[in-house]
Picture (cartoon, rainbow, N blue to C red):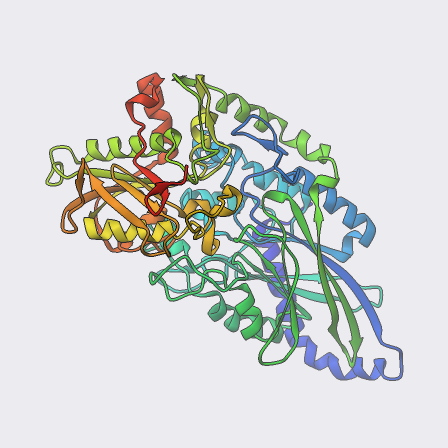
Length: 598
């Protein structure tokens, strides 16, 4: 029977403390027994996932069909379960551990449904599908991701209670006591054939950006110091407690970059820095960046020892395998070799035990997302939205601007022009001609962002747009334009390119970043640098996400706890008919030396 979280941690802590006390006393006799014998060896495997984002089934709830992409990847814990079962058969169940690096309970309509529609926090509420699936598969530990906090701390605490494994976060601290708000680590004993257990410690680290991105949910309740700082505190403790192997599960990418700007003193993607600067770590399961890194080796500056990092692709598309080879000499286990690789979930079928377990939940959510909420006069798509002003993105901004105008009506700022920012979150989102369902509207906005109103000047908006326009690769006039290579300059993802609705402007991609915005106007007149505008903006951007200038420090005029996605759904329901002619126009375009690119 699986241990509940409290019992598991008590036993782990007791085991670790016992090892720390008994280790020195037993060392001399053990060393004597080992003298003259060939060294004993033991191998084990740690499997890892990350950024599951609510994916259990190989299903896309926004298109209501099996998931597929250009690389024909598959997604979901049901696929991961099949891979895990195969590895356990090959290696032996007792010679494996299974961990995760965070971002578990947000991302699909399946996870949304059990946070908002039929919430797990309700009296006699359901068990979260991700908890059910991960318990059934047999996870040993999971780090917290930043998206764990999107639905608020009560939902996270309920999810934590429902898991048969610990949720780890050494740098998620109580704001008042500065003590860990979640277990910092877990300790796991692996039985070896020679009778000497191997003690594996898993340290969980999450992303300091939570303090910005979910400020409304965590401010005054929790603080999130840097990964390197907390790893330096806990890794020596784990070693002193007798850990033979130390693994870090870090919801933090490996690139050393940040999207915080000057909002936080910490590095967002700090996993490689932790490996380089904190001695005593054997391997790091990397998360957050949504990239695939089968194996990446980083030499620790203090010891010269190589630390092995691996990041499996998001949504359950890959499973990382860390293979450890240990040798026992002089009364202790030491890590002799670590390698890593990833397995592709599209090579196996879904585990029927998992699909049966959650079949009812899946069917409920499919029925929910297929509810009709209105009709559309024309089909709209995001296929060209990264480089053209498309009606489907105008829809997002129009709803946001209307919402903010209504909120400010009758107040001191009611007379100011209201603008709106929006991004292309998915290049496959669409609104069909005819019936519009919840899944269609929700597909435009896959994140749980809420809406704010910030006060900006014309000059600040110009800076904002220049920063956004760095998204485009500089392309000289006359050179061929390949849309597959036009965007994501400076590794800028689609969600960090904003178009601003309500302004007219051109982006000259022949010019260097920082001097691309031309013809900036409002209501047919050039924008006065001193003029004041209200910007309808999502809370991620308003909190500093993407490091856009000015907005995070701008005066907040209004904020809302309702998700933008739900606001769009409610707007469509209220209108009944979506007509692009009522809200869409071409306000921005790409140019080169004044000549339109498209």
